Image (tube, rainbow, N blue to C red):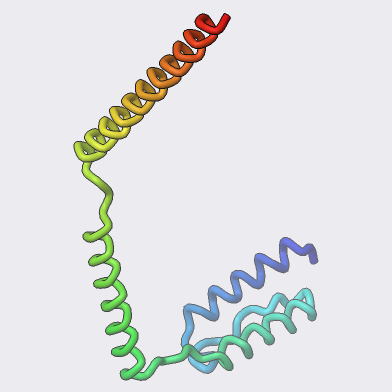
Length: 128
């Protein structure tokens, strides 16, 4: 039997197991009589399915989990409100202020540099 056929047969068997609550409540599933290895895999799947019953959490655990998750959600909401993104208008004002300060710093740097160069060239003209 090809790998693909085995996989499809096991998937179909698992689907059938998931739709039925107990093996005694239904006729045994078709185990693919043509392949004994496939039949063994079906038996193993049945044993695993019914050995591993779903866990049911206690009421205390469920209540504590709900309380904890609610508190975490509240904390996140508070943090989002306090540290929200700036409004677009505030961004524009901040950007304009940074550009203005940068422009002023550039002008001051340019004028002081030019003044230093003029001062140096003026001193050289007198000494020469």
